Amino acid sequence: MDRSFSLHKAPSLSSFLPSSVKFCRGPQDLTLLNSPSNRRSLRTGFTSTVFNDRKVASVRASAGASHCDFSSLNAPLEPRSAPGKFLSGVLQNQRQVFHFAAADELKRLADDRDEAVARMSVCSDSDESCLHRIALLKEQECQAAVEDVMYILIFYNFSEYRVPLVPKLSSCIYNCRLEILPSKDWELESMHSVEVLEMVREHVSAVIGLRTNSSVTDNWATTEIQRPHLGRLYVASIVYGYFLKSASSRHHLERCLTFVHQKHLNQRNSPQFLDLLPCGIKSLVFGHASDMQSVPLGQGPGRQENDIEELRCYVMGFDPETLQQCAKLRSKEAANLIERHSCALFGEEQTEEVIKTSFSSLKRLVLEAVAFGSFLWDIEEYVNTVYRLKDN
View 1 (spheres, helix red, strand yellow):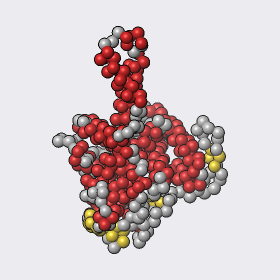
View 2: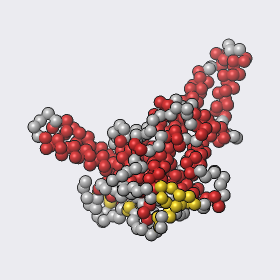
View 3: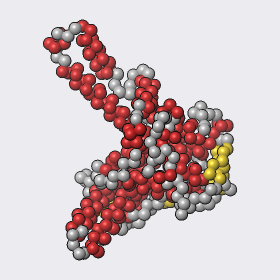
View 4: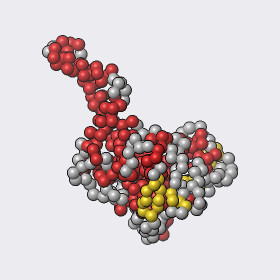
């Protein structure tokens, strides 16, 4: 089994950064329960919602050899746990309560995992080794289930933009020709803020060689690429999307802290104190604070262009250690999920097959991968508040 696109073989992040953001010396390569058909209620602190007894359809892993099935219920990776299958059924049949169901499943998994860990610590000092193994298996079961929950949450985010995930490539390749339709470029780009989108477009241009302002003819021109390389490109783009989300969130936080600090200084300057200040210092302190208040973050003429340049300069200022901190996957569950999703999409047994495809299809895959990484960062952040994920 050759997983040639796995995380530990993905190209280094710096090789996929736009030229304006590359570093002279970048980091090393990233190393990256019960039957759901039974009657169930939600325990989320809200009014209890009861799911009726019925067999719910789940998000399916797509199959087929001659067409690219873009059904809204198709995904490369099929949930393997009962919670994952249950949530995919809720997403199909009772979408309005999906978030309640997801929160309930995460809380239950957290309780089950904590109980298993406590049982392991008790059994480790006893002769009942079989109980320790049972507790260990329960913990592993919870980890597999929470990965499924994270995947369904990412799937839900894509569906909010009416963007289906690309199904297994085996269903999209015919006579060694790969075409992915519809492209959904606009929807995939609308998932990002303006300042992040510019860097996403630069990434797409850098990795597939397609200009941002390319013509329709350029988009439909064909190229050849080896299947393993396409897989590595997809994984690297997921990590790049994860990195961009981490870096932009960090940048926004620092800007907010600066704004709060300046506002606090403004409030501390009482009229009596300001009267004692020289005119030059007074205008400097008060003028800058008033500018911050009159132009909120992300607003005002020319603000978007400034935001784009600010983020790019901010990232360019990263030293290798900070770059690694932003790009490193924080949890083992996130790393496992990328591995599983990529294997399901490209197939576990990789050959050196050469695929002919259009630049439009390549762009579709790269944009999806970047969005997947961005959503993964958000979902990881949310899940970790309920179910403590393992440090990577």
